[in-house]
Image 1 (tube, rainbow, N blue to C red):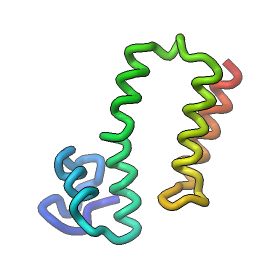
Image 2 (image 1 turned 120 degrees about the vertical axis):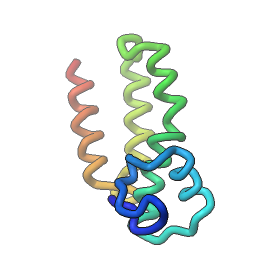
Image 3 (image 1 turned 135 degrees about the horizontal axis):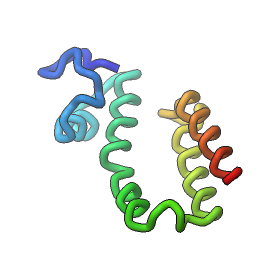
Length: 104
């Protein structure tokens, strides 16, 4: 989604600087669908940053089936289309990826 206003008018959300995304989410009263998209971008950049670091330190080969299932359920709870801010497309991708991991 492209920014409809501001100094980054016309830029894609993933092209925005981190501090601007943080400001948008924390300080600006956004309307849908921009609110959902900014939340998704905020979560990708800030909320899950610690998880990425943990996975990189631990290494994917050391994650067991229980940990994979826990990660899957957390993502499923967050992105299920019946929840506020959920997305059916993202949920489909999560399901496909989880099915592939189960076969390994």
